[in-house]
Each structure stands twice: as structure tokens, then as C-alpha cells.
Image 1 (cartoon, rainbow, N blue to C red):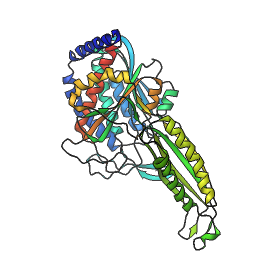
Image 2: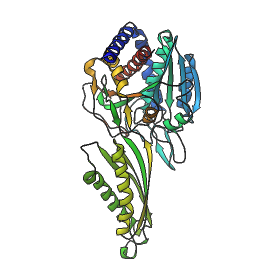
Image 3: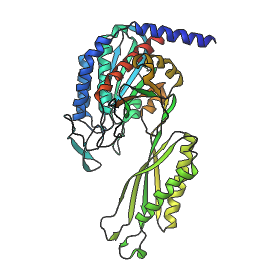
Length: 426
């Protein structure tokens, strides 16, 4: 009971402090800039570990604010350190900055027409997951907090992270490499906040979940070995394409018949198959690449074990051989329950209680999870769908689109959460 009373006083005191800080003029001034930055970044997207111009833009902005800047972190990452007017703890705010190998289909004045090379192929490049909005929002937060650093009790570390979508094969990158290079040290970070725009959530709405929020992601590669033959004489060969089809079908039974989906959701998806060179040749080999998404580590272990058992067994049943290699891409995104409780009043005050909504866990993944394995973190979802409409396009697609009107809520929420967190933890 004593701890509960202390917590209530702490929260009430924090709300009084925050309500006494009126930053409305700052928010009004920054909104147009944030939208402009977002559109410039959207029009000039860069792939993972190749975000050179994006990093230059971010660093130039932070330098203009008098914030101490570190560049070249995890290849192209940028870190800004703002020391407040009063001593206190250290809070990190993170935005991811990379784009995807997707060709944009939208008819926007700031549409991306950028092309680049990805896995040996020439591809379109697009901010098809909203990282342009995350970057612009955090640039806006940095400006507001830097102009009000006398109100900052402690230190804010702005982490602009490259390669959230995954480093190119053979390279390190993303949150893991930033952590490895010491981004949470010097000064040591006590907690971290982050957000993700969502095209299916109306602008002006924020959704969150305490505890497990987003899935752990794994990447798997299956190599199938058959025996080449003429397409007119399949009995003389071993068809790796047929074996691949049987493997894909078999893998889905692990989800539909062996996974307790009343516990948590799980997904196995094959996203790429490569085999053959000509219509009338049964090829010698095939390669399958896909992803596993889990929200429970015991389920993950079971699914991995069954895949490793099933893949070679199916291939053998059809006269071939197959190997599987599974590697982790992200951990489970886990929102620290105590941190959520502390920050929820701030979010409700900023966005309106009716607009701060609880959601279920999702099978998307985020390498923000690696920061949360090191320190308490809170990751939430910001609405980006045009209010009054019901149409949205999924992330990672050519038609993905975000309404800029939702960005200012992201700026306000991260700014106020930062001030309140640093106030309540002194």
C-alpha cells in the first residue's frame, strides 16, 4: 500500500509539472517543418546501411540546435546528446531511418523515383514502412527539447538508427550493432521510448500494449538438392521444385496442427523461391527463403525444432536432400509494464483519453526489441490514416501512404513523455 501511495503521488506530481509547461507555440512552429522534412526524406529514400544523405541531413539539423552529435554509429547512424538545464537520469529516443526495396505507385508530389541495387538486382526504393515519418518526428522533438532544455531534468539521447529492416547479407547493422558499439553507454541510458506509424490507425490515435507487443522474427533459408533432367522425362531426375512445394505445405501444418494458437499467434511465411533457368529443364536445386514470427519463446523453440526435423525428412521422402538454416532477426518487442503505467497519464493528457487505445500483440517485428533487452522501453503505435476514411494500404507495399496530419501528435507525445519521465525519476 505504501508503494502504491508513493506511485500515485509521483504520477500526480509529474502531471502537475507537465501541465505547467506550455509548449503549444513550439508545437505550432514545428509542425510545418516536420511535414517538410518527412516529405524530403520520403522523396530521397536510402536502403539499409546506405543512409548516407539521410544521416547528413539529421546531423546538420542536430548541429544547428547545438546538440552534441556522433556520426558513423553502426555505419550510418546518428546520435545526438542533449544535456538538460538540471541534472538527472538519461532517456533515449529512437527513430529508424532506412527505406525498403519497393517501387512506389502513389501519385504524390514527393513520390520516390529513386532506384538502387539490392541483392544484385536494380530495384525501386521507397519509405514503405514510414521510417521517414519517424525520422522527421524525432528531428522535431529534438528541436523542441533543445529550445526548452532548461526544463529538461537530465539528458536526452536521440538515436537515429540505420538498418532496422535488416543489414545486407554479410554485414552487421541495426540496433544490435548500435548496442555493440555502445550507444546505450557514455552516458548510460536508463530507459528508451520509440514509436511506429501505422497506416491502418486513424491519425490522432495512439495504440499500445503492455508486455509482449510485437513478435520475434527469424529468417530461414532452405536449400533443396535434386537431380537435373529433361522436363519431358521427370522420372529420370529428382524435382527440387516439387520437393519445395511439399516442404512449404508441410511447414504450414506446424502452425495449423502443432502450434497452440490459443496461447499466442505464430506465422511461417516463404517469401522467396529461386530455382531453374528454362521451362523444359527440371533443375538440380532450389532455394527457399522465409520468415518465422513468434510471440512466445517456447513456441519458437518448438517451431524451429519441427522445421529442422521436417525439411530434410520431406526431401528424403521424394528422393532429394534439403538443409535448413534459421537465424534470429529480432527479439520480442516487450514494453516494460511499470514504464507503461508511469507514462500512460502523459499519453492520455496529450492525445485525449479516448484516443489512447489498448491493442493486441501483432506479428510484425521490430529490432527496437534489442534495446528493450538491455533497458526498460516503451514502444507505441501512431495513427497515420486519413481521419474519416476506412481505406489504408499495408506497410511494405507500393501503395503505402501516410497522412501527415498525424505527425504532430508523435512530436507532442514523445516530447511530453520525455519531460515527464525525467521529472518523475529524479
